Image 1 (tube, helix red, strand yellow):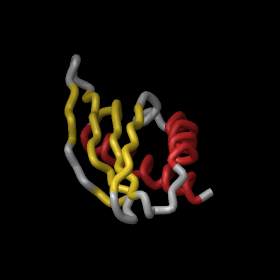
Image 2: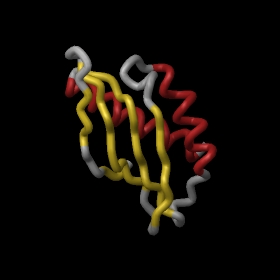
Image 3: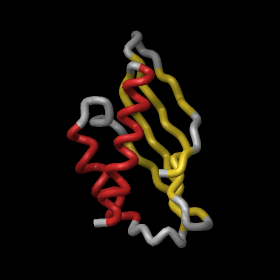
Image 4: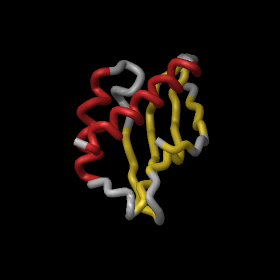
Amino acid sequence: MHELSLAQGLLDQLEGLARQHGGRIVRVEVVIGRQAGVVVDSFVFGFDAIKKTCEQTRAATLTVTTGEGHDLLLNRVELECDGPGEQNPAKERSDV
């Protein structure tokens, strides 16, 4: 259940970011600390299930890497803007 709430929190942040920039989330990279107590497979499963409920995140692909520490960090987000063929990588580090 912990992983599902983390996935929901991440998707809430992504939805806000997409609305702010007028686009859709295409790709997301997160780093999960080895000591964060997160089961990566469960987190990915939750992300994939919940992302379908929002137009801005529906097509997002998630890449997870493990790192040191206790944090879950949003490392990189790639947005597809509403202009023709535009993609905007937003580099943003944020604790989720």
